[in-house]
Image 1 (cartoon, one colour):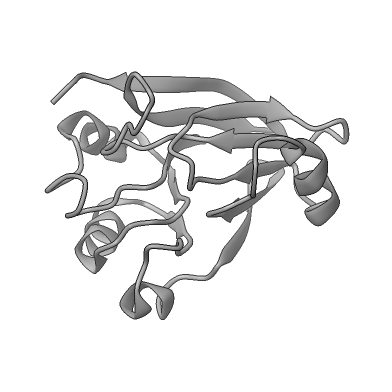
Image 2 (cartoon, rainbow, N blue to C red):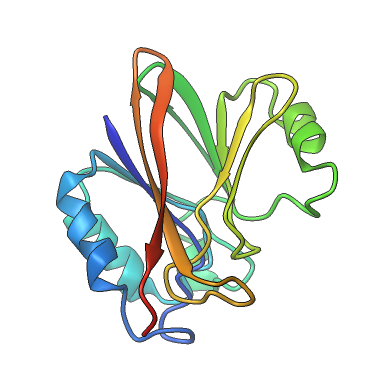
Length: 166
């Protein structure tokens, strides 16, 4: 099962549309996970139409239209692993221990908010993934998203994709 992970798309505030490279990944993804801060409902509509399966949550910049359609936290079993998706996890310091305590039932937690790519594993084995942002690099050198594969209870081929400058 191939996964496409994104967050913090902030359309139309940070970009008018999703990057073509990211859109080209949609047909290859079995599941798309979006960790919030969509800002507009048109991006949610587009991903719902073009994704085989979409798992998304709302973020702190998402208004009532998105909050009425998306949960704060989403859960799914994918390829034998228990996933959670949330927008914000708090400060980087202590993140692994804090998230492991909050989500002891999960194998993988996908989050956003910071626009900073993140890939770490808590002492409990919880894998934490932040795909960054494909539209707003903030203080990062690149705009980014993640792809991964999951099967038989294993998460493999986790790749951070860097998008070219606009």
